[in-house]
Amino acid sequence: MTIKDFNFAGKKAIVRVDFNVPLDENGVVTDDTRIRGALPTLKKVLEDGGALIMMSHMGKPKGKVNPKLSLSQIVSKVSERLGVDVKFAEDCGKADEAAAALKPGEALLLENLRFYPEEEGKPVGLEKGTPEYDEAKKAMKQSQKEFAKKLASYADVYVNDAFGTAHRKHASTAVIADYFDENSKMLGFLMEKEVTAIDNVLKNAQHPFTAIIGGSKVSSKLGVIKNLLDKVDNLIIGGGMGFTFIKAQGGHIGESLHEDDLMPEALSVMAAAKEKGVNLSLSKATIAAREFSNDAERKEFDIFNIPDGWEGMDAAPVSLENWKKIILASKTILWNGPVGVFEFDNFAHGTGEIAKYVAQATQENGAYSLVGGGDSVAAVNKFGLADKVSYVSTGGGAMLEAIEGKILPGVAAIKGE
Image (cartoon, rainbow, N blue to C red; front, side):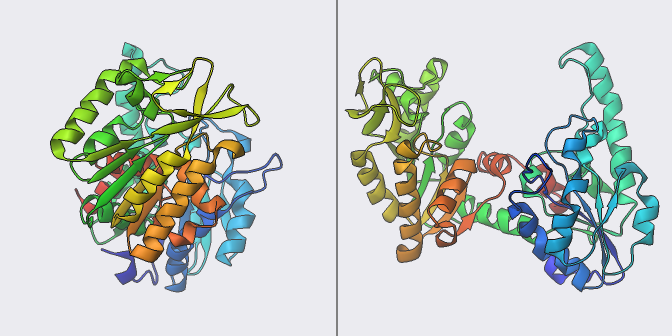
């Protein structure tokens, strides 16, 4: 069942949204992007004549009530964006009356799901790996089912529109779907767009297909890189993780970030790329600094010859020119992770240039581009290019796991995969 074809008239819909929005010290929402992202789904329920129940997490309260993470703080902002006065249920597990009283066109927001250990299904206050933890986890799984069943009892229909948590098998993201038949559970509009965008690069890519993988550590992206080697024509590896590849080849990288224990894996990736005919492109030169700070002394060095006392911080022009040619010749582009220390303005140039190349390939050459991951998203936003790429993913961890080839529980629970 797709949300577009479903009529919510006379139905109560419980929708898993991602309202994990940033708040200031006074509990005021400082960025409501995630709330706005859910609006098409939420408004569809109300405009059809349905009643709306929203549920979300905020932060990591670890199964305990924390007033600073209460969703009561965002009721006014959600009401403003939705155009209706949103009611609030202070206890997810005791919202029967509030849910039952909802009339068509009305909306209710439940308290932070993660105030309840049953949501994540993890025992609280016990050390992982101990017999006590393992025993408690078994019991918690049953409690998680009961919690999910309680949430399901509030509504006739379940909609999951929280892609950012789709890789978690939580009560509200996956387990709850067991209590609805296949015609009464569906993905929301935002989730559908995310799943389609990932399918476009992993299953339906036009070639040449280029993946740009950046960030600080190889360890966090190794599964992604390995899975992409069977799909891409070009693999650009930039950012801090590139130095592990350079050192593994005998390069001198000064004080640059690297992972010695991952050097055999780096060589293995390079060998696999060669065997599969993938063009693996590393940085040729770096803008290095004497210390890790925005105002540090800067100097350009060949990537294999960074002197002691210097740390690679950004991609140099010769690297960017090489990558520009690859990106502009591509028909499908996946970008995850910066190619420099993006949080420092003086070392954000390389990442900004990558953003421009991806946008140019999309706008001028008709490439399909998917951008995901905090810094990559920040870059296209910073340079005003978010609307110049094909799709900007909202779910960093979920997107990475999908690209790694893992099944996302939140999607599988709806699609029956």
